[in-house]
Image 1 (cartoon, rainbow, N blue to C red):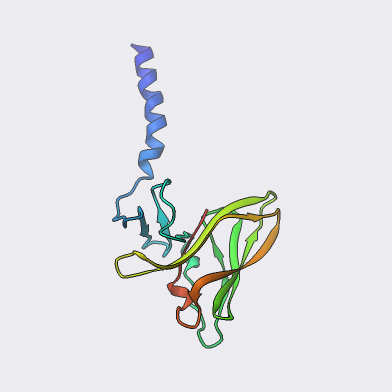
Image 2 (image 1 turned 45 degrees about the vertical axis):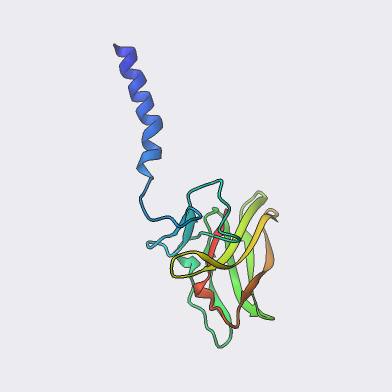
Length: 162
């Protein structure tokens, strides 16, 4: 009987962490949704690629308020990858350009997506890079192609970085 009790307690500890972090929430057709608490966007179905190019999720600082007259956005924005941020957001030749920074003491291989969505949360325009490599303690500037910065304010762009 003691063995059976130990087994059930062991199973409870295996299952409980997965259950405690689950949440409801309407998912769009790609298995993703907006996070009202953080302002980010994330996906639940690992086998589903970010909607046709680009769901990137980050923290609340990931949805900055841009200055559209100068087309620059101040701030450092967290991503879902610890130690990886983006900053120096600016409009250059009709494309949003960001600096992706790896603050870690190890290299990172990332999947990144920037995208816009319609009122139903379905993707409109997107930029995806599935094998983006950042060396140890480094930074790379990337141009978010397919999203015209003269038309789309940066604070309306969602992202998914993992």
